[in-house]
Amino acid sequence: MKRHILILNGPNLNRLGKREPEIYGTTTLADVEALCVAAARGNEITFRQSNREYEIIDWVHEGIDTADAIIINPAAFTFYSIAIVDALKMFKGPIIELHISNVHAREAMYHHSLVSPYATAVIAGLGAKGYQRAVEAVLDMLDTGEETAGR
Image (cartoon, rainbow, N blue to C red; front, side, top):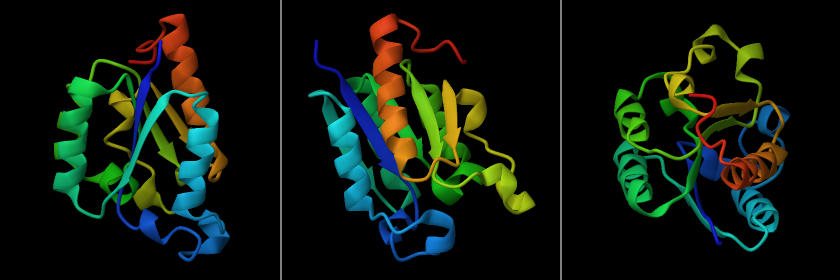
């Protein structure tokens, strides 16, 4: 059975490869998307990025009806968007919160995620390869029926 994985990326991630490469590396968002497609084993990937909170909310709403899993790198929205959290709370399948850097090893303003309590799992600090691991993880959760074990 083919699965549909929705991968959402928040603000400034369109600048990957150019933005603070000492923190985020030189991999571009297009490279990240290719990693995800390769890891998907023929399953459907919808990959999106926006700097606009309302678009991410609309995409989560769409995913509630169409996706089997959500991988989200909310970026700065992680720390203040109750609206994105409220949308994610409606999703019944696995949700992986993803961060390229280890947010817990950075400045204090990055230490408290509003998203984490509603995520099945959190991946942080693996660089762009964290996306590949997230795709593999949600497919494993879906295959084993452990899609909401962490929440």
